[in-house]
Amino acid sequence: EKIAQTLFKHWFIDFEFPNDEGKPYKSSGGAMVASELGDIPEGWRVGTIGEIMTLNYGKSLITDNRVNGQYLVVGSSGVVGTHNEYLVKAPGIVIGRKGTIGKVIWLENNFYPIDTTFFVTDKLGCNDLYFHYFILKNQQFERLISDSAVPGLNRDMAYSVEIIIPNISLINNFSLLARSLFNKKANNENQIQTLTKTRDALLPKLMSGQIRVKEVESLI
Image 1: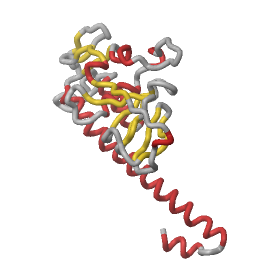
Image 2: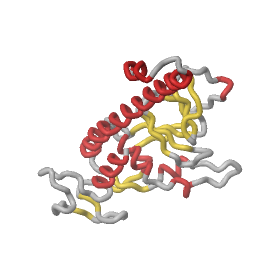
Image 3: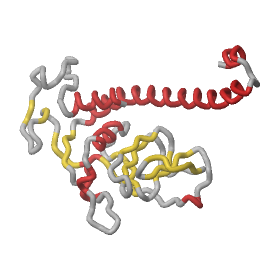
Image 4: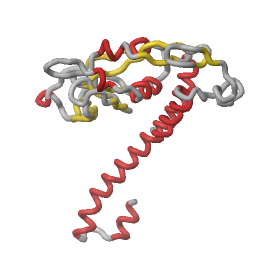
């Protein structure tokens, strides 16, 4: 994910995405135009978060109504349990709306965002949500906390945050690279979980003498 974050910065903040010749755009003399957010590549524009995505409200699911299952239940602080049904198809993004306000969470599997969160859907017609994810990660949403008895992230204020919007073909090219990196991350996490379960199953038997080191080696 850090590699993808670095790539996002290189392309969309430093404007060094590959030009038609595969060279870094800005440092190779790519045309820049003035905007209210400073110079930006020709063909890009200044817009708002509300132009590229919808922040949908999560749905209430109290602990007593959850049925332990394969789908993650996600709150503003992260995963808070599991359920036997999902609300949103993955991959997806959840943002803390109340509680841990502004936390941005990426989900690789179908999930159930509860009512302390927003979940993201695309408005540009992009192939994936990786660009949206890093746009959100670069915001400081805690500055937009609404003044109320229960502070929370105001959706209209989040929508109004100005951002630089590139052309969709470049966003999709970035998504292809990001997807490869995120797939590797997911595979690593799955391997870690498998190894952890294997360790937890074998270690007590090894300590109690039920199995020996050679038997463990043959199982691995």
